[in-house]
Image (cartoon, rainbow, N blue to C red; front, side, top):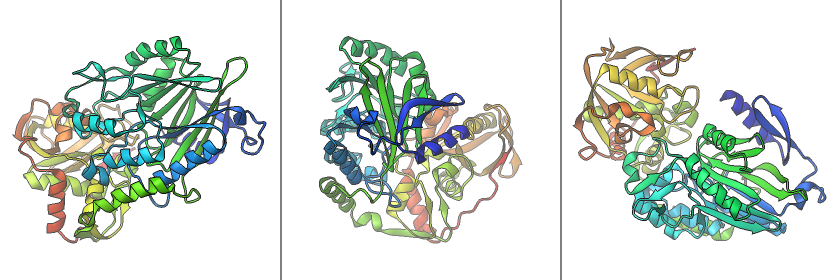
Length: 517
């Protein structure tokens, strides 16, 4: 993963790149064509189709001056003015989670994407955050096309909502066929899948790729929300796919697997991947890639900006109510929270443990958001929603020590990858041997200062997402329930109460998770 991160960093710095491959280990980078911007005879200028790629968009507005859907709308308009067909494509995760989606349940993002001119989207795991009915409602509000090949409505036995299982568009001499594939892993909580059937992405691809071929598609695009390794497995099995417009990872990726470009554009619209596609006279598919930062150099599209402003205004003064304050910075940086102990993770875990008076607490790092270090000062409701923009309920379960150890090992199994399953904990400490096998890394667990007893029963506070098997925490199934999801309190509401009762917070790092390398 660190090797890949270095490759990603390199790609983020370069300009337009053609398909002349330069191999770096098992990944293949694109050799740069530096004349493409200025030389109208360059191959890219002869292509007529441009994909503008987004994925994992949780904010409509710029973050730290970068991003913003109104600027992206302007980018699309500028590409169209070049005489090209520009298709704005979003590879999942945009209905949630965010401050605004906690209030509007994704309505705000659909409205802004409609205004910005989104053309095609597929589902990500966070499109299921509000359940079947809300998802179908948001799809009905969309003016763009949902391409979803592997998510089926059980009532109709067809793709969910208004989605189509595949799509074919003709642009000049390019007849491009699309399929859309969503992950089917435990990152989608089972209780969010009522009325929905998920099909293995490879099985769905095997079903619909021959259809695209029969319809004459000479360029094949898979719009996916899959883990990178699953994208690689997809194109290894189906080499006819020319481009994967992917999501799920929150950092830019642009590599080739054999002949296929796999692209991911980061998150929150901070950058857009521009992929120009054409066909040579001999039928070969040409692809040109460029990662474009979305900065203030792009002015806002007025129509999109008006929609965004309307929803920002409608959030209202309620979110600005100050509930308390913090005397220290709260580390909500995504990479930190998902790979190590942080004081914000400690705080959240402490809050839910205290609320149900449990021996220990475990919170999956994916439930601790914010995506930044929150500076000392006032904490308003908006900030707390940003930290936990979900509807999780606090539950309490009785488990033997061996199950607790199993859960901790599962939580650290993906390290050093920044994984949502990484455990933020309370009431206990542990050492992680990062050099050991992934399933057996946890050492010296102590609960309340005493060594873990595999046979002893402990009480544990959990978000109901974890209790129900989210992020592969399947070991809690069948354990003795003390506070069920139906009887528990909303995690966000408890956090608000805690901050109000402790107006000058100062959570610290206290050695709960020691990484032994």
